[in-house]
Image (tube, rainbow, N blue to C red; front, side, top):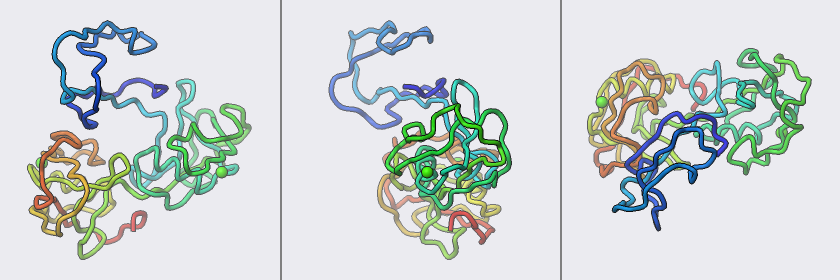
Length: 272
Ligand SMILES: [Ca+2]
Ligand SMILES: [Ca+2]
């Protein structure tokens, strides 16, 4: 898939159940196969889509030294080496593609001139000409990878809206917790929702400490999917996505159990 190394293999139809014929069961790969069909597998036996496999690849794009997980210096993995992006031609259309690829919300601002500090390694790419329709930065037209003469003083950065937001609260740091997954905003089930989980949301949003975790749609019922339940954050995570949970997109929770939070902070400079 061109995604780098595998980070996590996921069962139980984590990304939702597929449809149609199931082509492979009991897949046994050594790890050096170039394509999945080269792996030994068994087609006998009964499989249903509740066991559809998924994978989270090692990312080939990251945001470094930003104020939250959705802002920072843009770094790309090319030929196995992390490098940066030159700000020549860097604009909001290019930055929007980065926000999308990172699973963040819309772009707030494209940053130039090493706004988030200078990176190291190669400056992999310059003159990006994204049309803002691409789902990945590598799909954009550009001056070419690994060809530029740009210095790190021109490292590009981005500020995106976060993939977590608080809705219907009395200030920007309180409200119903909503998370962006697969391009769609949804809510969090209050099963297992406690102050440790809520504290991670406050931290991720730059909203200070948690005052109270709220349950039972305290801030009103949301719409769309209930993306996650049984969160088991240890309060050391910097992002909600890093917490253990009952799995994303698997629950049967209703919006009457939407989780909420009240954080101490009221200033949210990058996500307002
Ligand atoms: Ca551009
Ligand atoms: Ca919990």
